[in-house]
Length: 237
Length: 237
Image (cartoon, rainbow over all chains, first blue to last red):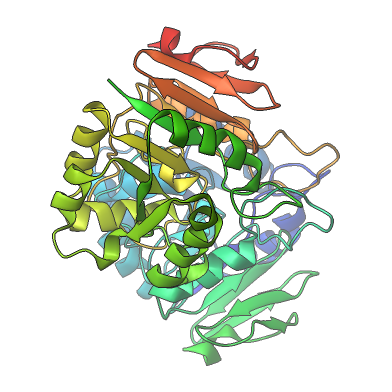
């Protein structure tokens, strides 16, 4: 029994923090009677403080009657996860987030509460940790986690902020598709390239693509697929 | 006593493998009486075989009288490093390269021979391992090395394929400069953003920028500097 929103990004170009997602999110909060959200700020985008990051979420959700608590303010963090009705992990640097969660030994608890049905939302790095490992993050390895393993709440990996090759680019760095192909040289796990504005709504055994874009599905030794809104990723595993 | 070429890339847009660097490289080979090159193919760009990657280097250098041996073909790899007069590590995936070098316990030997004056050339991932650690690579963490530590042949880190922000981009992923700023939130090591076409020529205590571009120098808690061809990076540490 899982109940999740796994989003490519928190923010789309030209729009405020979480705004593109807000209507869908509030609908889910209403359906699920969610009024309290435990926020995991450890990915720290731009190195901002845990307080400042939590405040950013609070400013968006508090006017809609949602109370936001930062996990960093709680003494017994494992208990806070176990007691929460809803958890949101924000984006930033995936290496930093995964290091922090392993250092305080919360990755297993997070997996447990997700499978027990606690509502979980992730954006970007917070979505990377829904996969089997963080080997398809786009982030720079600025810190060194003890392991790249993540929650395995999904049976595949996410590549958030999925980016199509830029036409006419003269830069010799690998495209995103080339990087994921190299991942599949060493790994057999499916990878979902989730474009900014897309999210996966997980409810029990359904894992449905939402948002205006198609998603790109990468399977080892196969040509990538483009799948439309409404596609159920659960069929991949 | 070090003798190195640390290049941003093997290939610039519109030009063949190593072509932009070839004239300078052959001049150095002549000056240093280098006729044999030990090639480290472990970064495996695009997952190609070690043989195919070594062949690619052979095709460029053999016509100029340089004999190329792939390290993968040698039984006693540590001895091969110790006996080599010149070593070249090609680009590809830095996580894969660093994992391979640590798995067969060659990182320390590589450091040793570089400081003993064996000529070393790196491109891209092969340049990342010249720094103190691989925390400023652009690559996807497709495999998990036992540690991110590298040779420390340079007293700073390289960011190869350095890319300026793309004007008018609507993509919400971090720019390269933002990523390096986040690195400096957790690390104090200087970082050299080396644009494609640039290389650092290290000879004893001189570490000089070559090529047509300026380089961008990132120091913790300071505004980045743009430095010109001829700049000596040794003054940074």
